[in-house]
Each structure stands twice: as C-alpha cells, then as structure tokens.
Length: 263
Image 1: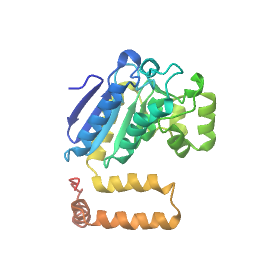
Image 2: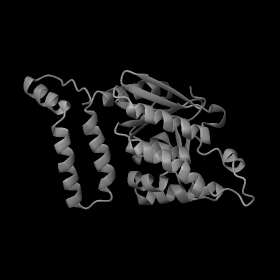
Image 3: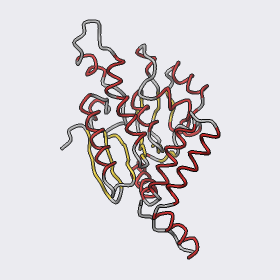
Image 4: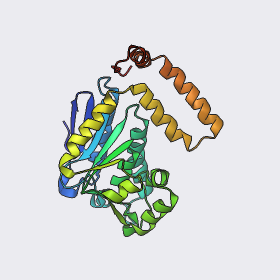
C-alpha cells in the first residue's frame, strides 16, 4: 500500500517508519503524503491509542530531499520555498500536534533539519546512543523550518535554540538528553524494545486525558494564567465524564490497578 513508509498496528500502537533509507529518509512529496495518510488512519482507529514514528536504515531523517525540492520546481529563479513549506511541513507538523493521541519519536542516527522538526513535534522522544541532532539549515543558507523555530526554544530554551540554529552544531544523544531535547537515551540495540515499552504504557493510559494534557500544555505558551485555569476547568469537565475516570476512581477505592479502555 505504501512506498515510502512502513505502517503496522499492534496491540493498540500504530508504528510509522520512514522508509527511504538510501537517502537517510529525506522527505519528498510522496513521503509527506504517505505519513499524513498513515497518521489519519491511526487517528481514526479507536483501537489505536499511541503512535510511534521511527526511521528505517542508518538514521531517523536527514531532513528535506533537496534534489526533489529543486527538481520539482519549474521556476528558473528556483523554488518558492515558502509555498513548498505551506503544502508540506506546515500540513504535516500541524497534523502531528492536532492528533488526539500521544506520539512517540524513536530516534537513531542523524536527526537533522526538518527531521528534527518532525521529532520535536512529537510528544515524547526516545533516542539511541547513535542519535545526532542538528538544526543544520544555516549550512545551506536557510533559517530553520518544519516547526523548529516554534518547538526548539520551548523545549531547550531560547539561548540554546539560538546557538543550535545559528551555528548548526550537532548534539549527541547524551547532550540532547541533558538539555531536555529527548526524554531518554538507550543503547541502539534496545531502542525498539524501549520504544515498545513506552508506547505500550501510553496506550494503557486514559486517552482523552492524554489528549487534554497535550492540548493544554501546547496552548499554555500562548495563554495567560486565567486562560490556562479555564482550559484546565473545561478539560477536567470532559475527563470527569469518561469511563476511564470512573474506572480510575473505582480502582483507587478497590485498591487495584486500573484497566483503562481509552474512552
């Protein structure tokens, strides 16, 4: 069904693997379309309660396929990169953030440029020892895109984001963990197992509550205290009527582990 991704659904978890290993999973139009399609399929499936994004081959993603961007444009002056972004990364990053389910990025090897933007848009990030992170755009005379200017300073702080963006420096996995860019670092050989464990844990939690956490934390950067408190009240009203909340309360009083169903 897909040519540039691998897509599977197992035990409440959907896994989307970027599958252009010969070009380090660089993004072309087909990859954009197929990731969006798989995300929509996972979002619409009530049995899926967590999504994993990962890369095949030697790394997660080296970013945009520059040859594809340039060759796909008939303008003698070169492509309008702004229009390219609006129809590709703007759409993809917005979709990742808007999905009402947690998304985990499993990262190894190069996580560069727009590949970094994709990883930052995910809710949690787990990195293998081999992972290397670089904003990279400055090396080809561009500013960061794919959501990097939004997510990076929020995750690592303005000073470090400015340093990474202006100098194009690469961070190894341990430094990325130290500055908060990733949530956990594991040996390469354990990445698949550790990712499955994290995704399974998220898939077993109350899905609506996770969505409200995701939504309100993102919105909190643009809200004042009063708006944040109101968002908590609105979200808690909705969570309070879920079957998972009722199960959580019952399990608390019965002194047992809850069995959440995602509803």
